[in-house]
Image (cartoon, rainbow, N blue to C red; front, top):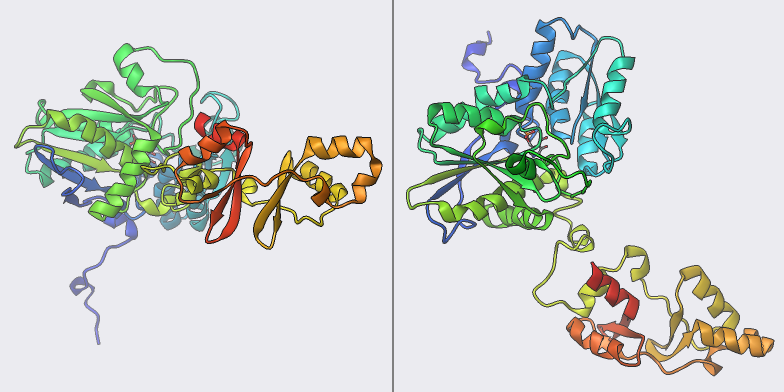
Length: 462
Ligand SMILES: Cc1ncc(COP(=O)(O)O)c(C=O)c1O
């Protein structure tokens, strides 16, 4: 049979599937607010993020200018998504890739880039952007040291906002039939907001372009005061916010900037996933949380478009991992239980260390030292029968050395009170306020942990 390729509907390469991402109506999260809300779902891009849009533009420009020749290397400082956009194009065109990434980025992103054959160099997050150790400076050094290499340079490359001026902006204009009043976007390099915002404002200067900035970043403050705080604050949301102003950020097309915290961002990302069925990353939660802060200005017929930059698959180990959320204080139940505070203790101290009454004083003293604790519950057949305190055992041994090889049962004090895991933390605090320095936590008739005064105070301080 003679094949007629014209009859087969296909794309020449995966790059041709870039853009034209869907606009999806939000139905539940925006309930109770006036107006109409649509999400621009960028996870539909081939690499799963809005940043795919800039990879092709940047590489083809470097090829046209002769800066990138066959066999060359593309280097970039990336939070992961730009790297992936570049890695896809590089895979198809046969270039090597080297990416530098701050160490706060999720392990999924590092693995994704390596899956595409990229070399990934992880750098510290908490250093100024111009420090030689920062991901941007390390990337520049690699370019200096590597022949036939380019820096994609998303923070300064005009091709970054231009890609959004050419694709994201026109798509939103066309998909809404020009009926858009608010464009909401979280900001990293500023490429998306500057490019798409410029296009939309040229079409209709009344469209309000609103940037959402993670708390800890300086962009919002700079927007309003034209100065920036010099204290370095870190935050956990990835890909957005800055401690400096990227060359690609054009504040002239921005009408307003709104702030959202890590916690607001992550809880909102989970809601977008669970309530709207759109599996999104942290910066999508930032955009949506900021959008809702802005939504009280919406009138009945207003239309808001919120750009959702990437997919939740990149954050399974973080935003969608309850342990990580809890450890970082992002997942707080309405009623705080003893179990909750126990689980928020550092992983390595969650396990209960208990001894039985026949344990020798020598062994108990070793356990205090090894585990860096000052009291140990004594448990017999699953039931607490006493407590040993380091100071009391040491005084006894100093007084009479023969205690070392005797069992702790002779020197133990009354057992700590037992509290059910589901009890409110206030119940635990009632004991700790009085004479007890710790309580034992029981679940399913088993002692599962200990909460000391220190544990509860540490939890409160967090
Ligand atoms: C997850 C994520 N969200 C949002 C952005 C911000 O996009 P832009 O750099 O166009 O401001 C980025 C940029 O890397 C990102 O990785």
